[in-house]
Image (spheres, each protein chain N blue to C red):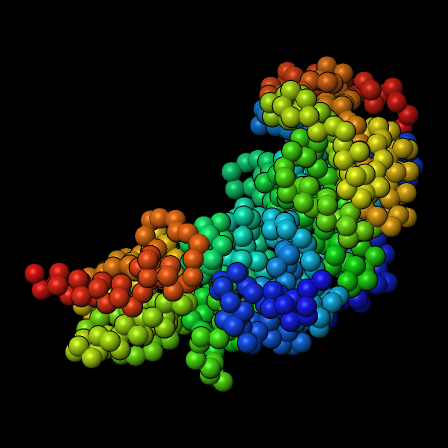
Length: 332
Length: 290
């Protein structure tokens, strides 16, 4: 029989860190979902055996009649959500990002995206943020979800936007993919207010020498890179592109004011934010140097987030090197 | 939050008259041939085989209101295979749920009446299925929603025996049994046929009844052309505390002797064959009671 304390620490481990100390102190998402569900009685919650890691224990304990545990069966979960939505419910389905998208792609396409079902797909553990290994790493989920017609794709950059993103997703009529990184105690305290709006980028700092477009965890890293470069006399604009689809068209005008654009994401460089930015800017005829920072065309492995982000180029150093190499190229 | 104002609504009249249902099924079989004949090919064999099931579901079992297809407390019907549309559309037209005249565009470019039924037709197609194995999951969602809002609506899912080879179906079966979804009824159109021929030449799914029983369902195996037996099975299903699986043994091409038993997934139906089929159906109708 395990001691109570041990049992607690086992429960709060969330597959992303080796020690319980790094586990989230505040369940930003779980609280936001309960809050949204208090406002809208149509909201129901589905999970596939990952209640604690998706913070839906708060919903389960608050609204047990609106909570559906479907077991380890993501395809079935998404199909059930489609049926619930057709009867007027607003299902939030939960899993790790990789299973919430790749394991049930056809089900999402046919039962959520095509009928514009009012289903919200919520994934945690974005990109390389897990010890568990390649099976649990979502490096293509943004690409998969972005390719589906009618799908809105959101990746907030920090805990401060989670509440607003959940409220916005709930209020949005139609399919949403919400890609979340849970708090792990390493973040700055979340601000009380948020400028998050679906489809609107947030300009976090302005500079004339280049534009950094990032989403999710790469926003904080992009800001650090911009601060470092500012000390070297290179001033960058940094944009939090928390809605990956539809991409804010105002990015075009911003990109026209700078000589170079770098997109950074905790995702494969193929098909995600970088691809979306490239498509938009090229089709609008914006003449800039452009590079993507993200996971190269490769699978990764399990490890601590810091280790993996360094190894696979999701780092301040990688962004700085990319900016510098683009500036070199333009000078030649 | 949920519209309960429809609680007093009454469904359209239904019948349990076996002779009347048999007459409707014969008429639907003629419609199947007439719908498919102009295109020269289609799901003829499945349509003829499932005609009795469709007649019973739409004229006896389902609580529907043709004047208001979106009635919140209506029973839901999902055709998981989605491709068996000749009989599906013929039935919807006969029940007044779609415009019979509009069916002239069946399978034509631009027509909402595609070979695989989609919600482009309207609410009567409750979900766009046809990517096989998904219908039962969607039906579970509908049954859960009805349970939560205490609606009397029941959900019926019709799928093919070949479709049981899809893994998602068994995820759904496991859940429905575990959740004791008594307002859910699955009907397996057990015609022993899939694209490549007889199901046992591909991957055997038998015994279907034992599998569902093991997954926590009430199971009955019935002759899919025995109207009395089907009516009784559906009635028993309504009184149970678990989901029911009716395994309906059907004969591909049923009702047209020259086509009966021919396992053709997508049958070519040149006009001489169609004319012969109609002639055979007329003879049978002439012999049978009206």
